[in-house]
Length: 409
Image (cartoon, rainbow, N blue to C red; front, side):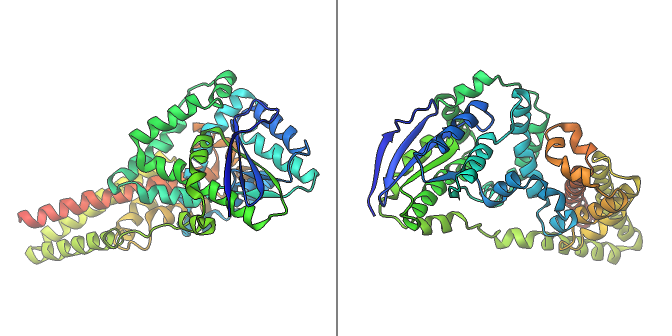
């Protein structure tokens, strides 16, 4: 199908934009600031202008659902989320939204206001709403897979560390970001300093959203004019991708970018390998003497359980949870299928059962550092994370100590 780029759009708006055509469908891509009241007002005006037949949004189904049904989070089964291995993803998602939420609070606007404005305006006109962004969970997983093993913990800590930032941004600075140069410069520096993060977080989503727009143009030829609302930081990257997709299979591109590469066999086998080394170390120690063997066991319990308990303490867990972390970590670490974080999160949520209000205010509370410890849902997630990190650190440190004792005896 022919694809033609027409360059910058001629809309009656100050928002940066460009227009291209595919399969006879005209697509206007509009760049906005996600926390700008001006962006929300202009998006609302464009949707009701009568110039478009459909609106496409930089949203995935889960983020769309959180906007149209903000109470859905109150129905979340917290323990089920943690047991399914999604606890860290939920925390990362909350942390990513915290900075935007904080800026929005400074400006007195609602984060993602332009998306909500577009959804509400389209709903009044019964206009189709197209979701063109990749699922946030898939993006976070691809970032995790793309970052070298030794840097993954640092990335997670850096993300959580951003919660302690107290940087203030003026509304005028937010509006300047939409002109392209400042935001593009920021992204370019990010690309140079952390290309393994930039690629799945920004560049891949540029390609994904372009492919989704082409896909929608081919699926619904009756919709002749589509308004696509995206963050201004994606505008240049998306425009650069247009020509590269001429004649390509958009559906295949979407499918490829939705795939999450499995962990390498070595990564999957590493926890079991460490357990095997530790058990062999125990066996060797007891073969030398019962004193040596019990000394190794003591090292294992004190280091592993101690660091897990420290993690629970940092999360301000219930005293019973802290003691449970000390007792559970040395046992769960010998079975990688069961994590100390999961066990301790279950105990914490049982002792301090999250209330409906904790779920209702979760997003607002996690926009502030104190809220992570004050909200029972967020604190349970912190117990899960910090206890898990402490137990993992204890496993490697104690394992090294046991290996060292075995080789020196």
